[in-house]
Amino acid sequence: MKILIQQENLFDYRLDLLNRLGDSHELVVLTSNNELVTANFNFKIIKGYRIVIGKFIFNFGIFKLLFTKFDKYILLPNFYYVFSILFYFLIPKRKRIIWGCDTKNKNLGLRFRLLMARLSQSVIQYNDDEKEKLIKLKINFNKIFVANNTINVPNSTYCKNKQKTSLIYVGRLQARKKIDLLLEAFLKLDLSIRENIKIEIVGDGDIKEDLIKLSKNLNIDRSVIFHGKITDHEKLKEIFLRSYAYVSPDAIGLGLQHSFAYGVPVITSKYGFKGAEYFHLVDKKNCILWSENEKSLENAIEDILNTETNKKMSITCFNYYKDNLSITNMINKFNEAIQY
Image (cartoon, rainbow, N blue to C red; front, top):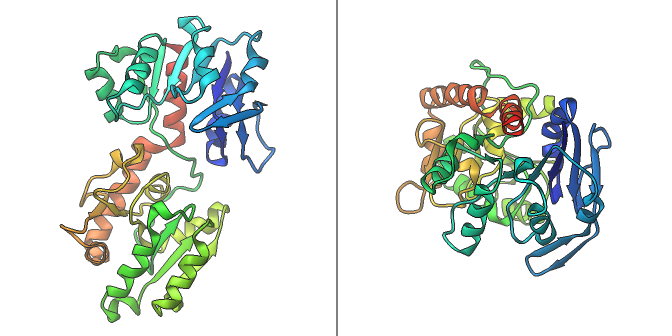
């Protein structure tokens, strides 16, 4: 089949999904912001000139497609993408697929997305919870397919005998993740604990220098390792396998899938930003959720350091990844939605 997928911001973490779909389909990706750092892909990219006005994005690349016929169009139901929304209504219903129908805010935007869901041949959602919400909103359950958002981890493994020596954060260093709270919580741990573990931070971002400065101000810089950005899967595996937990004190993203792939439990906020990934967390089963009023971050760290607790959570995380979060699972669900 000839398939068009819209990705206004095209990042490397989507490359495996798109390449796998490109193996079985003639795939074209429409974007206005191509951030791929590799040229190793097997799909065509159409990058359009874009104008941004406030939250609205006008991708003029859509006009390159007006006279190109596709068997299916996978579009994002975001009315801030003005031209692609207009384009959606020019496509026959049997060819329409929307990806990611957000149901959180009950406003005009939700009504618009529900209209698109009803007028689409099929709908791809990020998790089962979002599917159930659509069903309650009277969208035909037969045409809703759950492709759990994930990344490809080709060397996913679980090693129960690996010695644990660290707490880790892997990902972009963003203020909204509140990584500074991890450093402050570490300082509050008993000295006997701090002497035996490290904090390993993998990634780059706007707040990296601030975090380095904070670690020095807290006098814990000898216990904090800043690796910078690492893309080598084997190097990442070694870092994950020696860690007690992946700690993202507030917002949690695809780092959850990455850590589960190696059997590493998560510590994050009970009341922080709740994206699609948050659905996969079950407190005291595959993660520990902290909050200022119920369980402090340092208490959550102390809990995760317990050997028996950590072992139980680790195998739960790894099994959940295998059963629900592999890239193969995501691709299969995309293909089911395409064939529906």
